[in-house]
Every structure is written in structure tokens, then in C-alpha cells.
Image 1: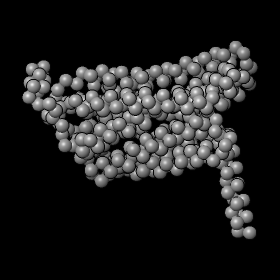
Image 2 (image 1 turned 60 degrees about the vertical axis):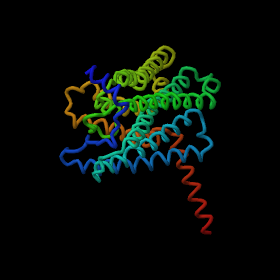
Image 3 (image 1 turned 135 degrees about the vertical axis):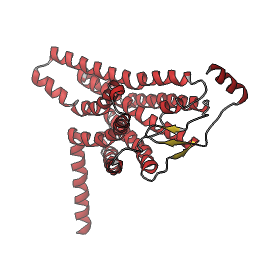
Image 4 (image 1 turned 90 degrees about the vertical axis):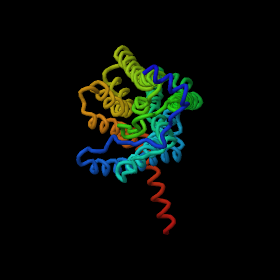
Length: 323
């Protein structure tokens, strides 16, 4: 293999295919019912996240650092599902599995960027809850609009640079044999394994990226809530502790929805059928963006009150116009 790679490097700069073939969901029985479900999930996701973003924009009382992070999460969810689901339906439902090389890299970039930002956005919300509960008197000083904007912006910059590096490493690969990607989208791991030249840098990145985007955020979130629990146990009564934790229910629900399916998949990776693993990962990609706005609307009193207020104003304006 080393001899082949060296010979390839001397004689051929890059062997880039005209297209890749996405084959992840093909051959699964009754898969068309799953596409109908994905379409339903996408519609609910678009409506829910659009409503959350609109409510935060229209209600001045919600323009707080916490809701800057909530708005960003809704935007990422909307953008991520819009980048993934329509293309996924086009590929498998309408049998357009041949995706041009450059389009595949763009597909990879947008999907990885949004999936990564979901995890880091949960870190921002976790930090907000940590400061609000542990340092309530200093919350206004520590958690400012400028700080939250800077934190979210730094996450965006970090993720974009990391994903651009992944895309750049793909462009140095040569594909001499198969161009069939056994996934539901242009997955970095599935692509670099098809290469016929040295892909060790891609392998290193594929090991490092989950640590930075998955394990470290999850560790920070768990440690922050452990610290919150220990602090409340020392200084608060049971009733006060439960009241404080009620403000975290929405965020904890989002964390569970995002991380638990991934933990199950990664833990049982070798024992799960490839088709089941692909469907589980695809659900992990599209399901949280649908549930996030529903959870925040149902669990967050401020958003519920804001929706009621905006709806009441809308009804009153219509009545006034008709009169």
C-alpha cells in the first residue's frame, strides 16, 4: 500500500470523481414510510423554530443573554434541518443518489457545521444556567449581551474553521475505486475510508473532532449540573432546590434528546445492524431540531406568556380593524 501511495503521488496529483453515490438508506424494507415521517418532522421543525425566533424578535422582554442562545439554537436547528432533510428526501425518495463532488463537500460542510453548533449551543445554555443559579446576584454583570454574543460567535468561528479543515483534508484524497458512501449524507468518515492514498490526517481529525464537539461539551454540561446540584444541596432547602432545577428542565431535556441517542449508538456501534445505525444517526440529526422549540414553548413560562401576549395583541388589532 505504501508503494502504491508513493507511486500515486508521483504520477497522479488527485483522482477526483465526478460524483459520489449516497447509498445509506437504500435497500431497507418499507423505507418510504420513513421518508414520510422525515417530511413531517421537517415541517414541524420549520414551523416550531420559526415561531420561537419570531417570538424572541418581537418581544423585547425576551432579548436577554439566555434567549440570544435560544434564538441561535432555533436558527441552527432550522438551518441544519433545511440543509439535510430536503436533500436527503431528494436523494432517496426521488432516487437522485448521484451527487457531484463539490456538492457533496458543501453538503458535508453545512451538515457538520449545524450538528456541531447544536452541541456547543447547549454548552452556552448550560453556562447561562450555571451562572443564574450559583451566582444569581452577579448574573447581570457576568452574563451580559456582549458576553453571550462573543461566546456564540467564538463557537461559530471554531466550528467553521474545524469543518473547513475537514473539507480541505477531503480535497487532498484520491478515489481510485469505489465512490459509494454508505451513509445518509456526505459523511467525512465514510468518504475518507474510500480513498486510495494516505488518509491518516483524516483519521486523526475523525478521532479528535468527536472529542472537541461531543465529549468535551457533554463533560462540561454534566460537570456544571453536578456543581449546581452540590451547591444547592449545601445552601438551599429541598423546595428551593427543586424550584431552581425547574428552570433547567428545558435545557436538560434538550441535552438528553441530543446526547443520549449518540451515546447509545457509539456504545453499541459494533452490535447494531448497519441499517439500524444509519437510521438512528439520521433520527439524531433531524429529531432534536423538531423537539427543541416544542420543549422550550412548553417548558419555558416566558415564551408561553409572550406567545399569549402576541396572540392577544394580534386578535385585538383584528377586532379593531373590523370595527
